[in-house]
Amino acid sequence: RQAAYAALRDVKPVSRDGQRIQVKINAGLRDDLANLSLTGADGIGLFRTEFQFLVSATLPQRERQTRLYRDVMEAAGDKPVVFRTVDIGGDKTLPYLRHDDGEGEENPAMGWRALRVALERDGLLKAQARALLEAGAGRTLHVMFPMVAEPWEFDAAKAVFDGQLAYLKQQKKLLPEAIRYGVMLEVPALAEQLDLLAPKISFLSIGTNDLTQFLFAADRSNPKLAERYDWLSPAILRFIQRVMRSVEGFDIDVGVCGEMGGRQLEALALLGLGIRSLSITPAAVGPVKELVAKADLGEISAAMKGWLASPPPDLRAAMAEWAAARGI
Ligand code: PEP
Ligand code: MG
Image (tube, rainbow, N blue to C red; front, side, top):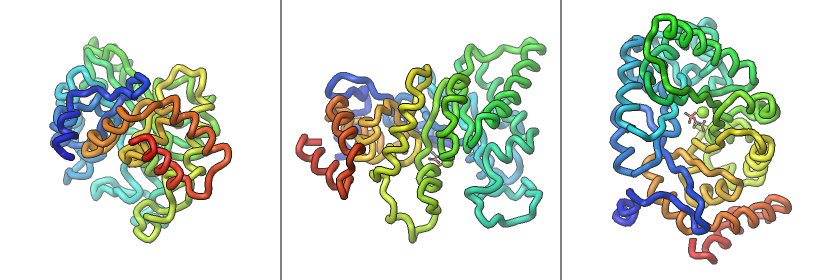
């Protein structure tokens, strides 16, 4: 099996009905870069920049950030890398970042984390923005903001980047050739205002790890709940279906970067919902490429419409049976 997946390394993911699917990897450290060539992935769809902060004993200085981001883009060559600004706070606390409200939040996942920290401690975001803009000199830079719940949070974060860009321009520094800004959809509230946000962004990446946690009100790190809710539930799939409908007509790419996309049946469901870009754990690239090659997207999207219009009692079982009947 492993050998079969390795053989898929240089095979581009194209569905049985001829549609090119983007299969990218999630990464966060220098060590992850080898996975790009090992898997033959289309790029890094989620680079978790907080990893550098988490493995560091002190706040990584701007120059160190710049070096990492530059190395990552260099290693990726022509392939795009989506840098997500720091998602720290909550359960990923940093000893060197003081929390105003003392230690220990009751609901850290819903607490002072990610962009909420970055907008308040804007020195942190300014340094990261400058590091990314400098590292992206002469290239296309992809920047993504985590945990956006309201469109103004995107505006505020982008304004920080605009400020740093203006500074670099004034210093006559080499700038990125293009900057594409995107947002993670992982807080359900944002789905209700996508029409307001979509005109301002280039891409949207659905983070199914946090999205599931918030949709079901089920702690993603609680092992007692790990098996309780299914990604192949009408609740999640209908949610994503509505998201896809609400961005129709806007010129943005929509992808998935949560763990859901790395499982074959789940990936099939996402393709059926119109998702054409998956960013997944490197080990899942082979299995997902294999799945894409077997899937007819016209067929799966018609089936998905039917299942979501009137869901069978066990959607996972129905999908598995459907897939098996087609040799998927
Ligand atoms: C997610 O929430 O789905 C996601 C991809 O981000 P993280 O797992 O880093 O929270
Ligand atoms: Mg998340």
